Length: 361
Ligand code: NAD
Ligand code: DAU
Image (tube, rainbow, N blue to C red):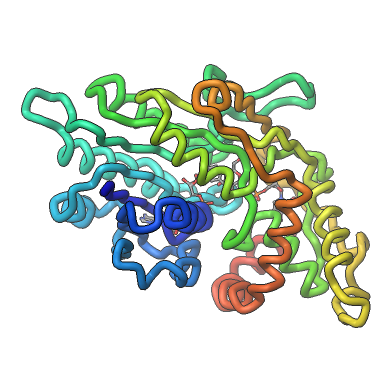
């Protein structure tokens, strides 16, 4: 039975990945989830799995060398899936340092701990061990509006925000471990994810939450920036397939071939919500395009991201399965049905965050 060490499993993609893995492998795997439970980590996301005998949660910071080494000493870890990171671009613009700390130093700690546990006296590594570093397409910088331009695995890194610079640094560290020590790893660079359990600082859950509350829907700049949206379960599947079928030391781009302008996303959410709400629901009366408010642009806002997922399709056979039309409806319905989840995460600190980031825009 393989033991997975998942970092950041209480966050958005990490918790979806853990659900995906238990759905797929049931009792045939063991998962240890290590998470510091920052504002973005929420154990409520994992309520359905916490009673499982083959699931363990450890509250620890990935920068805490002793705590991470201890997990490796006490468990024979076969796979590391490294999600833990500070993930929000706007926060990185206000407070870059924590991004360097978690994303760069935290990744170094994870690499060192895995290397220490897996390295044999002759400098090779124990059979079958694998480390997967979960990264982003933002490391490649920004594309212009030429519809034929894409990010490939060979595209040069050109990060712009403190977030993407910290992720690029962490990718480089992983590459350095692969090149120097032949450390058994892969990197995946994925486009924008959407789906259940995403913290409502990110565009899609923020717009759903505000729309249901009859609040303004903030659109940065001209609303024409493009992101390539992927349903989170498809990302979870890609990560699993890369670990099972990918060639060691390779990078794989993961994306949905689903480019949308931000304004299109916001209008789609309004349209779908209007279809889903009963005519008698008072929230429906307030819900229209009039809620859209163009606000001051994000500093250094990347114009367009678009992934070419040709390599992962050709070498591994992965393709996105969830069409955006279906995925966005599923997502909206999930937030509808989990009003309590939304209420828990949008109280207290979230309100202070919202006021600080949006009141003066
Ligand atoms: P998230 O912010 O929702 O979750 C991050 C998780 O990491 C949280 O549970 C948080 O508590 C934990 N964490 C943060 N700092 C930690 C620390 N120092 N020690 C231990 N745990 C810590 O992020 P997400 O959107 O789920 O992203 C997960 C990973 O995927 C990140 O590495 C991100 O760069 C990458 N990624 C995200 C997207 C996306 O669209 N969200 C796309 C591509 C790649
Ligand atoms: O591309 C992958 C990346 O996608 C991940 O690496 C990041 O962790 C993840 O946060 C996401 O980054 P973005 O900056 O693209 O996502 P965000 O949801 O913050 O913004 C999506 C787009 O919507 C972006 O162009 C900015 C815009 N936006 C965002 C917010 C929060 C708005 O117009 N209004 C908003 O209020």
